[in-house]
Image (tube, rainbow, N blue to C red; front, side, top):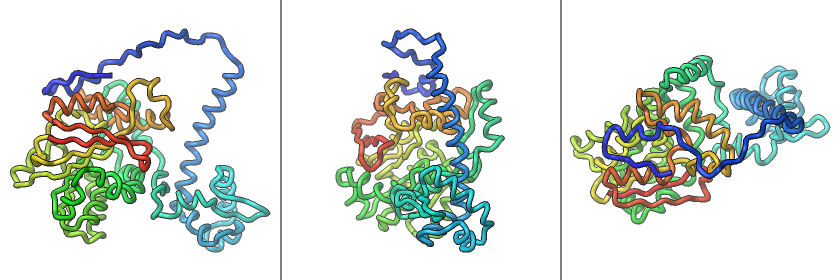
Amino acid sequence: MTVPVADSAAADVAWLAPVKEEGDTRPMRTELDNDQLLLTVLNLFKAKEGEVIAQIIHVGHRLGLFTALDRECQATSQRLAEATGYHERWVREWLFAMSAQGLIQHEDGTFALTPEARFALVDEDSPRYSAGVFGPPITQHEIDRTVEAFTTGIGMTWGEHGPETCHFQAAMGAGGQRHYLVPVILDSIDGMSDRMRAGATVIDIGCGAGIAAEVVASAYPKSRVIGMDPSEHAIEAAAARAQAAGLSNLEFRTGTFDSLDGLKDEGIAVDLLLTLDVIHDLPRPGAAVRSARSCLADNGVWMVADIRAAGSLEENRNMPMLPLMYGMSILYCMSSAMSEPGGAGLGTMGLTPEVLREMTDAAGFSGFESREFDADMMNRYYELRP
């Protein structure tokens, strides 16, 4: 899908119009199929299973049960209860649930993590570490606000979700950012690694809890790294991270893409602008692209990461976990992108290469390269130059 984008505020709402799916004229089924009915009910309960088990994984992570079982190598429920100080009956039921989920092995009353579960839920240095993704459940406030949005059209900002969502959001990309951002993603930009080793200015706009900014600042101590995010919860978490890391070249500020326009007043020309899974969340993406263009040095680079969306629903069906992507969009991404009246509403699956290209062309970018990496199976990366 190609969307014409003019250099005006009206362009930022061009995606609000419903999209007509072309080329599919198959008749819809109307007769009840009992086999399909059974599969439908099964799928519904599988969805409920995922909701419940996600919270039990969170409980185990919060209680340190995965880590404790890993220390024991293998243990009975009684042994694990003694090691943790928890009630054996509760520990036993948790072990049964995690064994049923395939995360824990069980034989003759003894339990042990699978090697893969250890890699994903215990080893914090693993690029696939995912324990933090299983945060506290969505609150009643968030559900009520989402229901309300179907009438008002106005969604929630990321900040409105609260501090726990900030940590969950950061956890979704943390492993990959720590392992692949510098040696794979940034190193793919011609000459950028040398520039940052010598000393460059890097802005991570939409930095969230600041993991990517910390990774870059640590890898390039001569470069100045500034993380910016509109969420006070995110900046609070990022500032605590910077203090703990003790990196003198790292700072965080509360700010949006609008804040980029003021960098020139500070005498800051941006050598590298990072935007990681942010553009599809913005109510005014076209304006954000224009602000990004204005802050870059003449030889600066804007590296954008966003979901490997294809455009239409049918084109997206090959993507793993597609229901999760659209569900995340309703609760978080599209909600954020419609958190202002007239918001563009791109959502999780809305930033295709064609849409971004239209916006960057209108903003005056002359260089546009798209690439994908095996290290990140969900995102597509765009290297944009003035």
